[in-house]
Length: 109
Image 1 (spheres, rainbow, N blue to C red):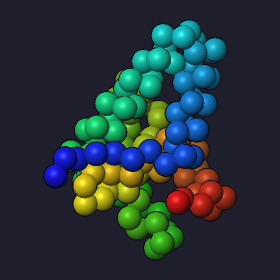
Image 2: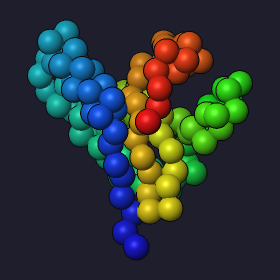
Image 3: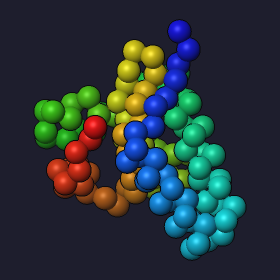
Image 4: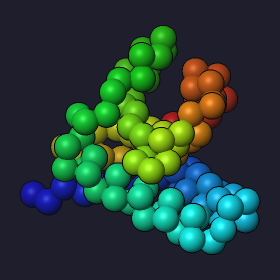
């Protein structure tokens, strides 16, 4: 079985939003490099799904959630769920987000 990653629609939107922000606030190559780094991170997590840390959130319904930083963009966090065949990328958020409050407003699906 080949390890793979699945990007949920909200995570895909997160990627697009962050790449656009970086491309307009810094320069287009930074936005492009962010996307490359994010997808390399997803591939790595797919092969080693327990690499990230548990979020330590109080909500027991989110006990499955794991977190990992995007190398080169360490303030960006990948929120993901390990699966039998890899990982499911749920969100990609900036570390300044208060995760508990953010996830309370957002349904991870």
